[in-house]
Length: 160
Image (cartoon, rainbow, N blue to C red):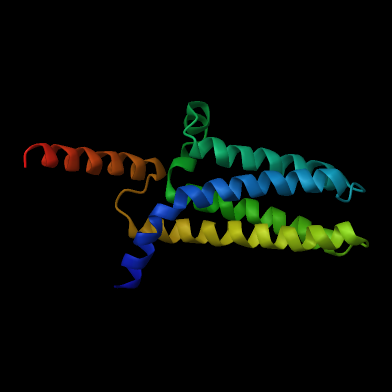
């Protein structure tokens, strides 16, 4: 099996990983909002952005029409991948700042922020790579192609 086939074979994990990353982003924002460093404006705004970005990730995966219509780049592998890389960079930056702080919460957020940030970053890079290997680059196109395959299989089974 070639590398390209291996990468394409991982498409079935895209939706669940997107859900997990969206939920992790919301949780990281909530955690940061509860006990993060609030000495700067960024310290106040970043957690709100993390929660908003996580909710946008989830809404795009749930095919909420207003999000798909307003942010059509989230329906393509490359758009979602670059969005994930952007969000991950923000989380990693915030966790680095928290790691410079003192106390148990700062150390805990540093560890959690790094794990979540790198997980979202890896998924983002994977989605960008997948964009260049796929002919149908729509994330929702996967669902449509699976429906077509299921319908074809059902029709074939009826005529056997």
